[in-house]
Length: 177
Length: 313
Image 1 (cartoon, rainbow over the protein chains, first blue to last red):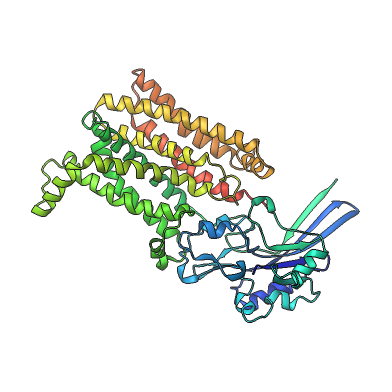
Image 2: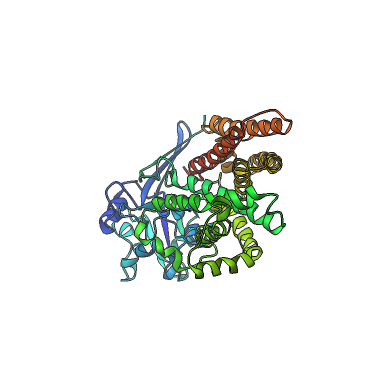
């Protein structure tokens, strides 16, 4: 089992519905976000190209945050989901500094918080909140080890990339390009 | 002209516009830890070499400050934690891949060892010291017998502590400026140099002071070499590391780094110590304070600049 997400940069319109859905579902404190929209405008005017990305924790296979955590609070759940055990976290900030995607933040209550791929929903067989609400249906979530899953199928058909693969983290959020 | 405009909707506190998760606590602690490691290194080294009386400043006098600075460092570290009441979780596990974990355990070992060391040499400061209880006297006599063994243990732990202060940063590949293995030896050397300076202050024998001035000049030379080496490495590396180096080569940290760390903290004290060896009269406290200032600034600047260096946007 290896959970992954694929996000279609051609279909995403940057509406931020995923951001709001995540904040509501996970009770994210005001002023913080676990996922966010990035818009990249590239080219020479008037030949400009826009890429929309809904970004979040990449649930890396070789996670620097899990490696550097001194207490084991940051750990891999089943299917490679990276989560933080609140009562084990001392709030040292090592994992926050170790993430090349800056996907973590220090929760006002002290522990470190991040995207969990909505593991509480996934365990019930539901989709993560961001995927469930996306109005353009540009996000795909599922098991990479299952060749018939939606995410495996779409990654087979479409060209994709991951963010800064050269950082060696083996990210598992794919962007369809 | 080709342009790339990146707009991010993320504005998490202490993360954006650039990482600011670590403030003054960490560099202060790294400085104190490095200094403590340096003092304990020289104290144990000269004990092992059997030169306790020749180098009494290093072996018997200077270590008295070590438990204090370690405790101050630990308090700073505690204040840095944001989930403070759970700090004991550090000591429920040993995670070999996490420098912070084995750093915490090293501190757990070296802090009581430094207290033992001070207790064994307490009569240097208080000649009439009396342990009063016979059991304490017996323990002291027992430990005195095994002082060389204790010195060996302290020697290892002090090197680990000194290197760890740099490895804590270099283990983060997410921050290109920190992601260089030079930081371990650089911080170790800087800690040893700061310790040599403090020993000069504590020593009462002119010969010992002169020897430590020589040691300090040599260590500053090594530091300068390591700094040059670090930038050479960055500039020959990937784009993100070239950009990290540029923070110091024209970027916002250029003036603070080269003026405070290199000129005021290394070159000037080295010249002053050299002149002292040439029999010029220079108050010992001046180069000592400058070396300590440079050592502290090195950690502050590396800590803050590292958080500005990044991979993405």
